[in-house]
Image 1: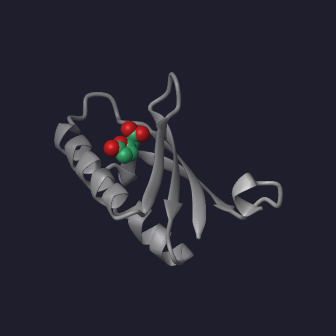
Image 2: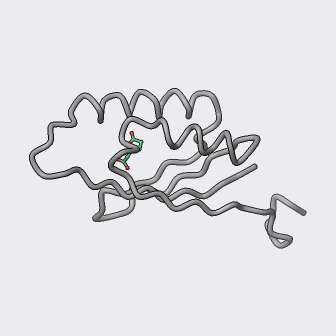
Amino acid sequence: MLFHVRMDVAIPPGLDVTDRVAAEKARALELQRAGVWVHLWRIVGRYSNFSVFDVATNDELHDILSTLPLYPFMKIEVTPLATHPSDLAAQ
Ligand SMILES: O=C(O)CC1=CCC(=O)O1
């Protein structure tokens, strides 16, 4: 199941999150290498990203997102994706 996910990060001013950001990157790379986090794009001009996740269940996605190191500082919006009948790949 594919999910479009928008993550907006807001770090409280003055908080040192250097280690957390490094841990977030390590986890993101791990999930990308596992084929779970299939797209990761920066939203221009924002501390935000658009991502696509490929997971088996809603619960799996929730577990992944809620254990990200930056999760306490994120606003997350999830959109489930379905196949579009005019998608070339679906012909
Ligand atoms: O910078 C972000 O958008 C938050 C984030 C997700 C994966 C990562 O390495 O940083």
